[in-house]
Length: 97
Image (cartoon, rainbow, N blue to C red):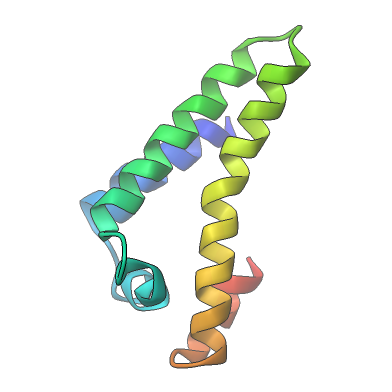
């Protein structure tokens, strides 16, 4: 379920209608990677997690799914923590989330 939510957020919230705060909080990352590419990464990794969740008796696939969920969340937390510490103090709420 979380993987599907991740995919929807990436597709609708980052690719479809990126908010100003999202773009500003990810400014350290989008210098190197376009925001659309990050959104599509979020969608792809969410789908990997959703598909891995369907494989019930394979701990390796489920571990892959949890790792797929952790990559965008870790990137988000790191980018927003860096933004909160430097140029965008309001990003502290998203960094903690």
